[in-house]
Image (cartoon, rainbow, N blue to C red; front, side):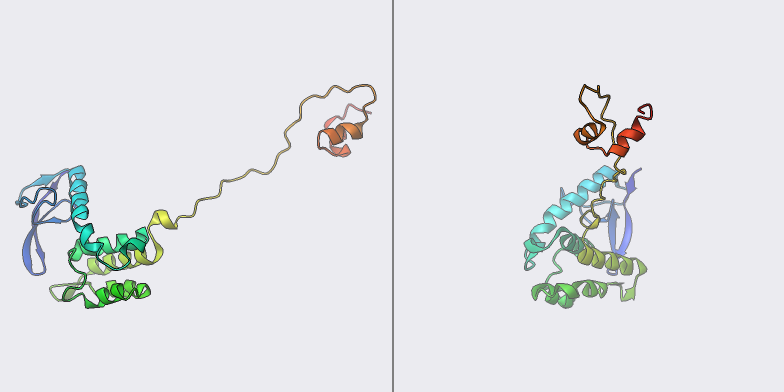
Length: 194
């Protein structure tokens, strides 16, 4: 499957988009995206990686970036991928910037939800995206939140201890003790003994 670039209205402007949302220029080369350009899914992933590599230094300016867990960083990266990496402390982003600056991390998920409009209209896709980002921020990434499933244990089964050759002077109680069994276990396991 190939991605083919197309026109897209972003903030009221016509923009050229290809791949997983790469807009206007290719992050790895800086060359303009042209209508009709195609990318394979692998190339699309490479463009996203290049974008995140360029974007991360801007996001590292957010206070306590290095102390955020992977879920918080991923939520902000998703948000920045959508609104632009220079959002922090920019006009129109005062609410989320303020919460990040003051380390009011419990308020960030609700602040993310405020940024759900394009061209002044609430868009269902942005509402859903902001909810997912808020969930990532609060709950972490799926790999962070999945508890390691405890290995399933089978009920303890007594393994046979093997054959034992009875020697002169052995008693059933001695044999049971030596093999960690009760006298009743030995008798049940050996119905031929009278």
